[in-house]
Image 1 (tube, helix red, strand yellow):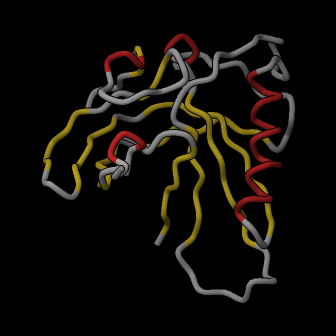
Image 2 (cartoon, helix red, strand yellow):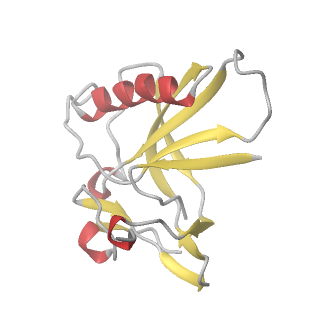
Length: 159
């Protein structure tokens, strides 16, 4: 089983290819563009979000710890959006950032491969700049439904 962990914003991927303004969401996102979704089911404990297929830039890092792998992976992807691509173009940061991890029991000293992906902004979905680092790849994630638990929020904190 593969779990998707979102760094920064709890989102994941799939009903109409929509990347748009973060202002369309009910929660704060620190980027101008984000992956938009349709809510197809909502309960008091979770909601099911439908996301369309979109293009992402991805890399993998190996470590015994997701935290250490995420540092390496984030740096590689940040270099890509900072201009380390064949066109030398800067690419705007978007939300979410995805971190994938396997749901397996293993000894703590064994290394695991952790893929990380940045959503490409709308203007780069059709023809994204090709990465110059061989460890960085362009990927298309399939359409999917994602179950999201409600987040605890600072303003919900008891006094």
